[in-house]
Length: 183
Image (cartoon, rainbow, N blue to C red; front, side, top):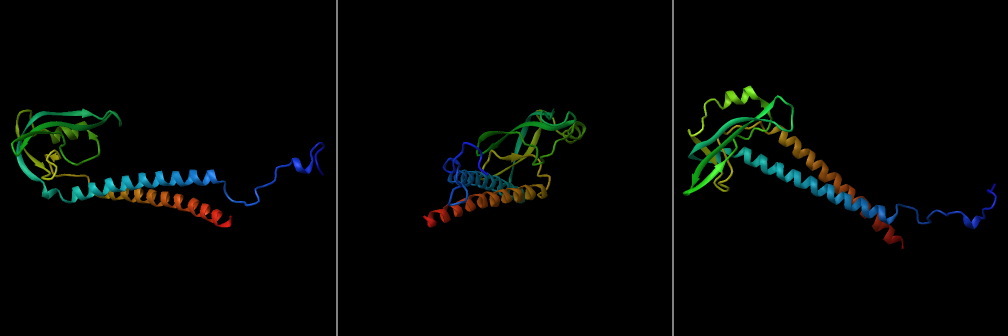
């Protein structure tokens, strides 16, 4: 039964070709490219970090001295978390370079932990600095790190995003190509 006042020509007819509208395909394709790019970028950064941590023995040793040694509170985490706040100067090929990294540990820890770790260091004291011979500005005081498991896990997640982004890009592209072949 037709509603009063509507003719059969006034009703919207469905798209005879069916399928997803072209604008949605283009949007899905572009979103897929963005997700794939971000997944690749994240995975690549994690790969480089893994490579760096696996080859800390390649870092060269040089003499330096502390300019500052203290513990600072973590401004983004919980109130009990802290980080070491060190500043040191070392020389490579006669050039003065300032470093700030104690080690490649990522996790914030309680203030007491860092105070204990830094108790052997003092402002103005000499210190051995390990620096990357390829990038002399990349230096640490201790060859410690939190391990590679978390970084591998993060890299796997990035690879998953890369795969999902590529899939999100290929599916709309294949739908568009099917549509083009029908015409």
